Image (cartoon, rainbow, N blue to C red; front, side, top):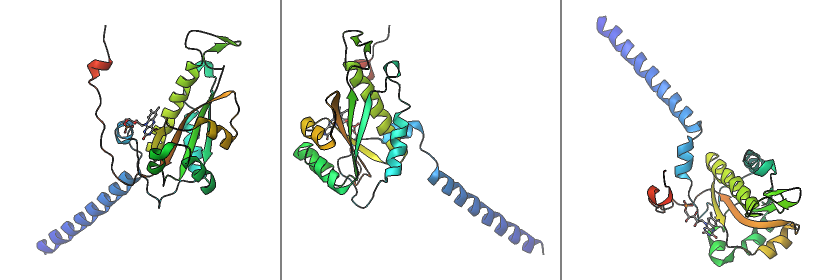
Length: 209
Ligand SMILES: Cc1cc2nc3c(=O)[nH]c(=O)nc-3n(C[C@H](O)[C@H](O)[C@H](O)COP(=O)(O)O)c2cc1C
């Protein structure tokens, strides 16, 4: 009898144990990555999975996150033009150079990033210091940084492309002349694991006084 009770108790415990570890696994699978996981797993991805799509609602969530980025006097000069239809995707693919074109061939979303001139770094129409519209580019980079990190947190991958035909992109999206065209950013899901590009030693880039 004692043996039977022991057997039943062991079975019950192991059943409970497996349930809770399955639960834990399910929780882990749905839990958001930590900030460090986002930083370390974000890499420039140059090959995308053609079978995985991103919805407009997901892109909206992503762009909403960029609105949390700081900007000069809260000028928010960054604008985004989102190619998500097949027609626009194909048109943008033609405007990022041959190498980039093959790298982003299967990316389901391509985003053009611009900033309005004469806002960040200006006060009442006058340039505040020597950087001028460079502050617009600075704010744009901050906004793009939020974009690529939020993308990673949502499980997406990205590639920022500075090699692009700005004048043709301006025509394609009807970007007004008061906006400076910056990067095209590809979004999608990685088709293969990237290599880790080396970083400089911290002491080469930071001095403490
Ligand atoms: C402003 C900017 C422009 C870039 N332009 C290109 C590009 O045209 N094509 C490309 O393949 N990668 C481009 N990159 C990606 C960089 O090569 C990449 O960030 C760098 O090698 C570090 O790799 P990681 O992003 O994987 O950490 C660009 C990155 C930045 C920030």
